[in-house]
Image: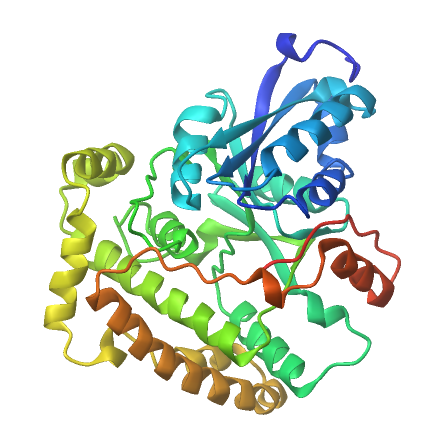
Length: 399
């Protein structure tokens, strides 16, 4: 079967979402990079279809129209045009959680066995990245999610500042722990994803929520880290937070998110009857429909029971040093300054997160365009400093 056959006559095996908010400047280069991925040719060889959906949410710029133009051009010119369909869905409501819910439960093809989730502001590193993610799920039936390795853009710099080195050491500690899930890019079995519903007050911490549900099979046992599989030689690049203020804001968001995940997974969901956990998406949809503020009330009750801000969730302050346990002696020594710096940042972030949650804030999402480089400048810098011959697709860095 050739790639120029009518897509309508072929079965969708993969559905891929690109989540975008105000990415007018970077969406074109990101989509160009996506269409350089070998996934499309591999899907074509199977005689199947890859469905591509750009889900824009609450955009105030031209993100949707730029994405539509790029999709139209690729549909006309791409060598595997018969192996994919693509469209843009422009949601009025801002927020990735709602966009995720809409894609998983309404927009994606019901026949798709695997769903890809991709942020619009990352740089795909190596043309085989998406294909390797899919293969990782297919070759490891026990896994529910496949992830790649997130790489900070500063890792490709020819020279690095002290701030850069601390940031990279922090990444080394994070990647040394099991079952890491980065929400910027992953693929998930569709039947697992469709039993998940994101509450609106989850505070943009979908990665922690998904990880907890996937590794416990919807809170039915203790975590099994091998439910999440890291694909070999699959990577994406994102723009690192390096300024102290940006790091602090990001840490605050993470503490808020992990607190809410703790309240949900370790308490509220664990107390649900087994039948409701096995149909968790329906359970959470019904709860959200009946009471829009149910999660905020759970958060408020948790804060009343939590006297000190550093006890928002178990192991909050010890988390930085706990991540060093899987490192060798030399790497522990190298990473200790980063762990100490993260501890201080997390202490302050915990205080700010506690105060924000007490004020009823659950939608905190720090982002400052003024602190970023232009998309193509970042991509060019990565290419210029990238070691080895691996081809990079172009996209804007993020976070």
